Figure 1 (cartoon, rainbow, N blue to C red):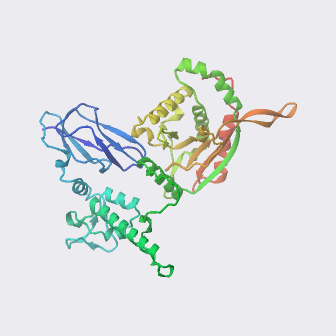
Figure 2 (cartoon, rainbow, N blue to C red):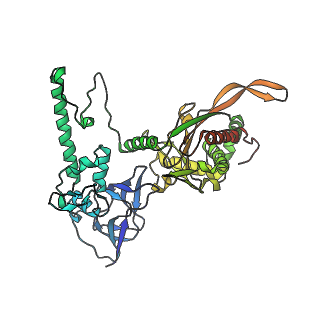
Figure 3 (cartoon, one colour):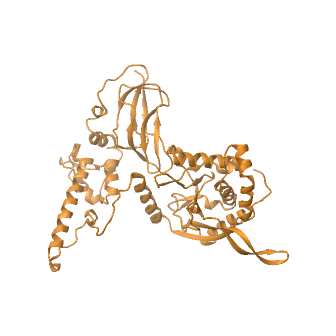
Length: 440
């Protein structure tokens, strides 16, 4: 029997696992090459995983909501017509928890300084699945606390069921303690418990409570992580973009007629950024402990708002190799894919520098948070007409000009204020000196 293993694909830099959202096939179903088998979610984007072979699904190894490491086999496809009969995904692995524990036992060991005995009395390393570790991390459970949770899995391992039961038990006990505290006199208030965060907050007045969706939770985590990782500094600059605005107004109809694409300001901004990155390549880098990794590829991310209100950053790969028309087509294609939830995992991977247009929603400036593992992000504000002083051969005069603020947030671990400000002003100069007589 010829069998092809379907593995969880590599989904971009720094992504180590993905969550299964939905299986489109079940064991016994036929599948075509490149046909969608399942939907997955990472901390950046939801995506589809296609079949890598034509045949019949013989085995599905993970269930919906399982968190699967990159590179693990998630299904098997029989390519010679012999079908392995099975009733359901559940039968392939007796339970989601047991299978999840068995698959990763040798990959995610945790060994404290002093070896602890498992519940069956044996001494040695205690293993935790990525799912259990992920839950522990998101709920603020320390490793020392995780060690003390009694496991019901094989060899005393902690399963998903165990950790969720622990959290529920602690939540209930916290609620009881809070009720008791409120009913006692002030001088009898008991000592604060160790895990107060699980006590529900009581709100007064007329409020609406909205649970964060999965993507919003991911965004929140990434933003906090970035602030903890990088020493954020933001510099500002003002820019006269009158020439650029007038050129676009003059040429946008002809551009759309010839190229079939609407030209926005974004590709014009990216074009200026690319020129300046080539002058100051350290801006296009990342930090690895005490090493600076300068990226030779210039992959520009562009922050894009989704219909849900969430934000995602699709990436234009090798942007420096595209002309203005190519940049425009890439910008429009990725923006449309983002708004219609059609982005692929690779579309958000490997960015080296990010542009965010806070002016889209009327803001004149912003202090953006760095998109890890990059070291800088540029924000452009709304373009406003203002009276400004300009220099002419006849002397200074006041004129109405199209003005815009730029702000650059950068990682002060490797980008000092002098370099950050120099790069920012270089971008401003490129935009101010835009050639109003140029072609497309």
